[in-house]
Length: 259
Image (cartoon, rainbow, N blue to C red; front, side):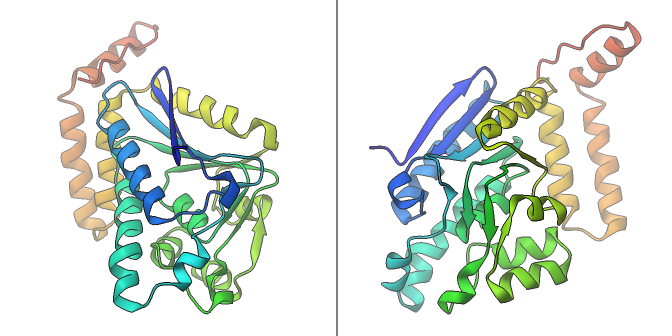
């Protein structure tokens, strides 16, 4: 049975982590399969938005495979697992296409770290989030320590990592970890509705916008503003920018072609 399922609905693709018996825990084979499936969708011009969710009723991704982690030591762990999960999550984070998490259940450890690598997050009202690694004598090692500090207030990020506590979907919404909390049965449908809305925008302009946000976010503000100015110059050289302006003037719906 494949650990990753792929489905396309018009310009939206769904990637499902399909290991419900292990609560969709991430091991190296699953990560490599996820990387391959994601790369294929990232290269598919017909796909404008990618949604990631988990199989089963209980979990989005419940974390890493603890027995597998316990078997690893030092450099072997770094080379065999950490290097792979860092590469895959960074690949997802740096994708030019918008990504959405449909968090249908527990998102603990590596599950929360995957959420942090995705652009937008729709959470089931029953979802749980957390970075419980400290309770195992570990700390987050799939980018979590760095991404969460860049996305949440430092005191909230540190509390989650220092205590290892789980938080509810409503608490995740309150601290800005997710965009929206919805009834569990509606999680994927709401994520797909949001994805379809975004997919109707220009894929070229979304690509340039994501690059501007990603690269500018790593720069000091004066350099980031100059970078934004250069990127909007590229935008104004596109057919889609002029199509959007003309459609507004002519009071009609824009038809974007990605050029």
